[in-house]
Image (cartoon, rainbow, N blue to C red):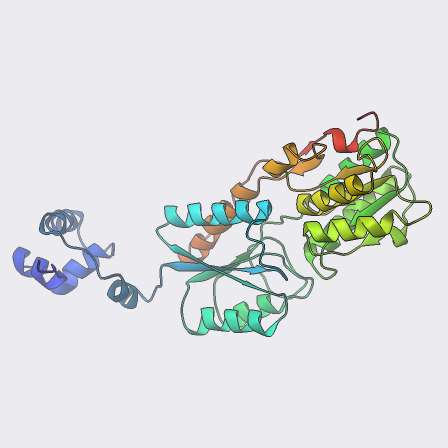
Length: 341
């Protein structure tokens, strides 16, 4: 079966190839009446656009990139899964593809991926996650004139759209709840020391302690990798402390799952003996043993919002409006209730 081309449509309608091409690409300089004729004829003739040629004409790839910054390939992490689902679903709405890669933070591999995405013109824009205090990716994308949106602001002197996804103001609410249950000696298991998530949430943890007149113990503050392994290994270490903490505040639900596993292994009751809280509101937190107290963040909606904002930047809209998403909610469950069995 012969492939129908733009030239065939132009010949059939007795129009120029340029007019047909611009109508099919949605340019506004073609009258609506002519555009309708062309689109209807194209459908009738069975025209299928050559995507590569179309992208070349428009100087667009119709793709956006997301590079997961992680030391471990953890696509099964529920937070990452929700993020990827949101990114992919919103990308589909805008008719663009999502290219996903993974690399360790500040590694040669990460640098190579960003250079390839930008200089090989593989994507029209990039979503940045897990922003660092000083983030080379921000400066690189700015210097490359590559559109990008991030989930937080770094300290770099670059102005860019960010969604402010740390929600550190929820930490004092967690501390207030823990104090109301009678917990006094609190530990904190965070993330990478230079990540904005870790820095902001640790600051929120300190503010919560101060507001509730609870002591801050530097020896009970740890960094981690957001994975359950960090929660597990750190908890085994914490249980050797004398006096040991009576509550552990985690930077993520996944970290908290590791904490709960270590406590079960050592026959320490989560809740009645040591309170545990997470952050993220993953579906799995409802079914952990015991059910996990957490901050329910609209991760999926945030991811969709990031893509929508990036598409506004790519399309050079005069005003970039970052839409609101639902506020996070502190969900209190058995893992942080002293009377829980």
